[in-house]
Image (cartoon, rainbow, N blue to C red):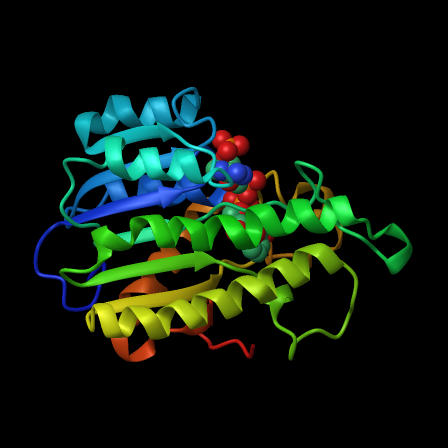
Length: 256
Ligand SMILES: NC(=O)c1ccc[n+]([C@@H]2O[C@H](COP(=O)([O-])OP(=O)(O)OC[C@H]3O[C@@H](n4cnc5c(N)ncnc54)[C@H](OP(=O)(O)O)[C@@H]3O)[C@@H](O)[C@H]2O)c1
């Protein structure tokens, strides 16, 4: 499967949220491919992440760890104007950052646990950061086939919400989906070869899901490497005609 439909050169890829979990596994999966030239691996603590250092030992200059807080627009500006100064085009950007119970976010069971602080924390990382990332990377997505894929979550689907709870996380992902769909319409005008996708990676064994894994049925908790492979399959299966859509790890569509 090609990394991106219609791409006929080796890809420059950037993964945001790369220091651990699914983002780290995506970096490893991209570097293992011979149709990927370069991977920028970005997160707040990328340059000190031991797993990324191990990948860098294996892949040398093809992997570039970069520290950047996606909630800070000055850091995003510096990422583009300094770190990516020599890069003409990014063929693939994956936003794999997100929080559920970290950095002030809370996985609320009910309204009584909802606070302004946890709503703000969830929205800052899960919603505002990925769309500001897209805003700042836009000049690098305009010339050739380019895919911007953001890891969303099935629990962000309003149509699929039967259990309730997790107010901040659900709402932040639903709002992310709306922003991605809106951006897909603008990007189509700027670059007809662009694709914007929201992807649910499946429940995956990472720091984000760890406190909630007890109730996951047998066989439904994925290893990050499995999720990463599935995400790249979904990205490879959907080009510009599908821009602005929401997919699960098994390539089935999810209702908004
Ligand atoms: N795991 C699951 O079961 C599951 C299910 C559905 C959806 N998802 C979604 O999949 C994505 C990846 O989740 P995960 O499970 O891999 O989480 P994770 O293991 O906690 O990793 C999150 C990554 O995001 C980075 N990050 C967090 N805040 C950041 C910020 N402000 N700026 C830059 N980087 C930041 C973290 O690195 P630093 O700390 O170095 O910044 C880390 O690399 C998230 O969007 C999540 O909502 C996960």
